[in-house]
Length: 409
Image 1 (tube, rainbow, N blue to C red):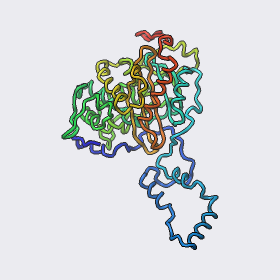
Image 2 (tube, one colour; image 1 turned 45 degrees about the vertical axis):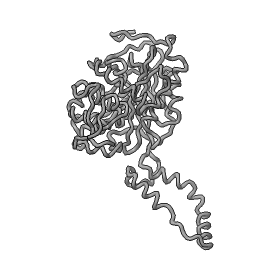
Image 3 (cartoon, rainbow, N blue to C red; image 1 turned 30 degrees about the horizontal axis):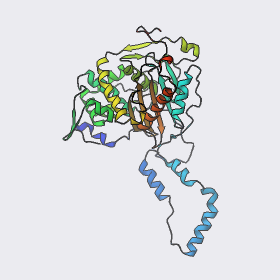
């Protein structure tokens, strides 16, 4: 990580390791014999090393003794290595699971549902697909996680920081912030490459009060849905946390809890040019057919949203979300997020596509071990779009009823 000029941002050297900010949905380990600290990777490594038997001289006697001991303990030690790894792993959330278990899908678009489930595959995570023109949730894979899984947003928070910085004149699209003696970046490259020092500088220049204002304007700290049972409002602190620099909040999302629904609503407002809809989740096809869009608020951010788009496209073209690309004629805009809390690695991707018909917002959240990160999440989102494209979902013949400016169909 590059050094930055602001002393208060020295904490950025800790990388992506961060403290938990919210209670999130996970699958706690059922092992009872757990160590006192599950969050120390160094202790895990040390334990694994000290648990290994010391090799002895290969004399006949030693060999016989070892063979006898091994045979006597074979039944009790079979699979010990894999159990030890699970027992002492600092993350207690599995990477793979049946993410469809318990979902109720009576009001979903089943074509979109199948595309999302197939793309997610065996990963332990959630996929939320929204129509950004109306706020209708077309599918919500792993509904429990999507509704209550408020996790640190990682680098997806850079969308908020960028819009806030543009709105307050701290940066413009072409501003190059100097990050060290020999390096500087503009907004497009910083978004595409998910540069932490750039957005930490933006946060420090803005200050907590302005970051707080724009975060809440964009829906953080409040429920994204309209009367969706069981939805979490996530977390955005009312005051600056004493031990968290603002730059850590605007680069890593430290001290913030975000749900997939909140990110889907935020990205939808970018996709449609500045309308923040309440997300609605119909419980039947009849409800879906009669859904009336509900506007939460109009965001006076149209010009700033236009300045954000090149960086979000750049993420897919040459940045952290290259795995999302499947067809240059159907571009995708997005932002990845990768970080770790005390229980799990996190992989985020918030995105929307740019096609003539049936534009969609696709948000992916992955939880689990080291295999989980933002680029992997972007690949899953890209597969959702690809699956639908191969079925001609974005063709004119599949166009859904248009939504007028007053929210009616």
